[in-house]
Image 1 (spheres, rainbow, N blue to C red):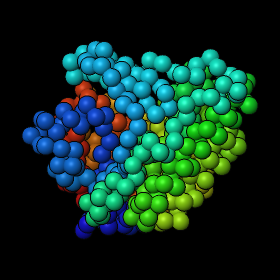
Image 2: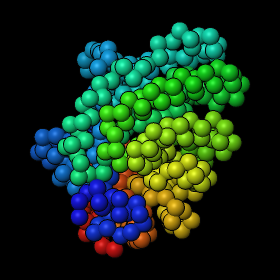
Image 3: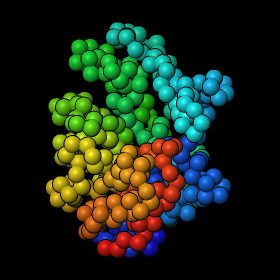
Image 4: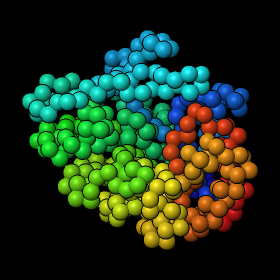
Length: 355
């Protein structure tokens, strides 16, 4: 069975030849795994693991985003958010250092802010990627090719200030929503002008949950987020792309909202968050949406042994995989300190498991 066919069969709530595989890791871990296994590229790693998805994205052609080296390295993303490369040894990562709109609540300031445009990207490169990956389930890549809203605003104004700004400075917040969503409306249009009907999934990514519950109410979702996400999905839907929704945390109470907006897949399923136990999700929502992820990244993959990982994966599959509607992957980005052997064991266990 071809990789694309396998994924689409699971989405149709049918049992394919094996459970489909998804992979999601920080670049530092992916590079570590590629080197550890003696491979040459991320594509070779995906082939080695037999992952069923491939990501596509336009080429960034704007001003240079990274300057300096090692401990002096700095990065500025397309939104003007700045990051420092911190940590030691293998445990290095980009940490936010400057929230460019922190402390600002005057909507007039936003008129002169250097907002990104779709002209920062070359969409012509998509054609080669789409041809290369035509036998896989093709998805818009995480990062700038995965439209979001609140996660972008949080980076602009500061995560700790986000809720206060939303509640007490609604005019300023509304302009932020318009600026961020306006960029993505244009980006999505240009993306699908180039890609046409060859993309299987548009990944829309935001984080609406914490470990203990929602960080936004159902009312905020309905009033602010839903109209934006519905518009994000208009053009992809016309081209036959399915909506792949990403939200970390305890988002069980938003699942009916995700489903009614058109989401066919939800990831990454952080099963230790409140209300996200696999048994309940499968029982209550398994007929309406496909779940992707769910292998505990924090404790099982990072701290377990290969034997424990295999045991945990097979227990998870016993619950989530029967009847289709499940794609195996980690419950969050795999961190750089995760043992490579544990990730290999995750996919080995899934190949050993049978419906």
